[in-house]
Image (cartoon, rainbow, N blue to C red):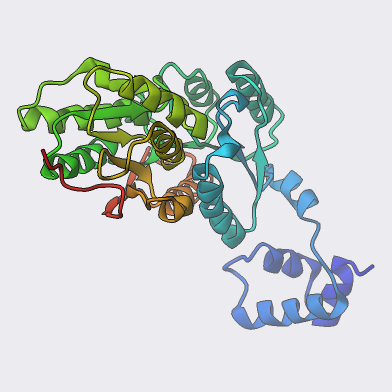
Length: 341
């Protein structure tokens, strides 16, 4: 097995120069870098990244914190897609990912503490944002670089970096679209109650109704987990009412698929009897029957930007907190139609 001294000898440079080439030091000329790298390839020499990281006190690993298993995150296509964006950025910068596997929120907090105290990771990305989350104050206290996908509470919005959509505006826009189709009895199926994305969706939904002069009916607002079964259970609650809604705004495409299946089993036609809109624009929304009208929130870009931002924080520990807002776009398909009385 070749050593750094072997590379230096064949390249005609000092071992310290080889080390600087491996670290991509700007003090080394491009010509020298090319020569040293050619020799490394010729000898099959690969630098000991682990040893170098020990010297640099870095791991080149980012911790990825998923919601607790009780919310079945891997059932929802949002998470594989956001991880695809994170992984793409990780591959560019050649760093690894370390995933949390907590079954409960208490387990997750303990795992995050272990990650930080044992210095297993250089930084952390939180894939969710909820009220009263103890992880954010812990990471701030430990001065560990981290980024939230979603938004922090108002208390932390100026000290925590995050990547998010304008979820209030997105929900208002999609509700306004349903209103333009002449629907007035509109249901809202939200995700978990303590998630900021749910709170923002509800705010945007209510803003649109209030602007249209429509009274908000609290019995038309229900909450369930963002999974297929959650959509089924939610639509049962709504359609069991004496005067059910003629349209529903659903927090998530996977939930919306559950809504569609349950409506079909009840004998309702979509969109003739009831219109359905949702959020995320994952692949299954286009393949559903009928294809879903949904709000594309560019999930891949959320992940890519979060990974880029946490790397910037790691490189510049004194960097001020940043907020990056990813756009959204309404994708009109066949699950909506104009209300005909």
